[in-house]
Length: 59
Image 1 (spheres, rainbow, N blue to C red):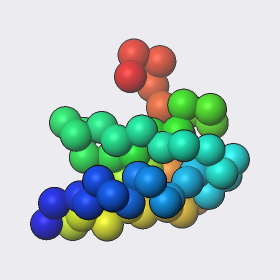
Image 2 (image 1 turned 30 degrees about the vertical axis):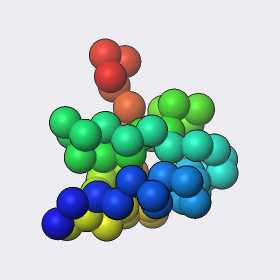
Image 3 (image 1 turned 120 degrees about the horizontal axis):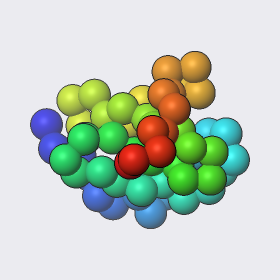
Image 4 (image 1 turned 180 degrees about the vertical axis):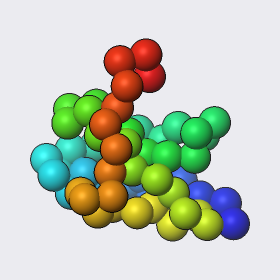
């Protein structure tokens, strides 16, 4: 299932409420402000703080 890009217009980081960036290659959403990465599972963003991972410095 593909990620719906229209979602980027209405969803936000659950921590800071900031804008999320879509990483097509990694199939994930990135919050640069909080340095968190949210997975996309079968086209659905998993926007749970406890399931987020830290953004690596080379990302």
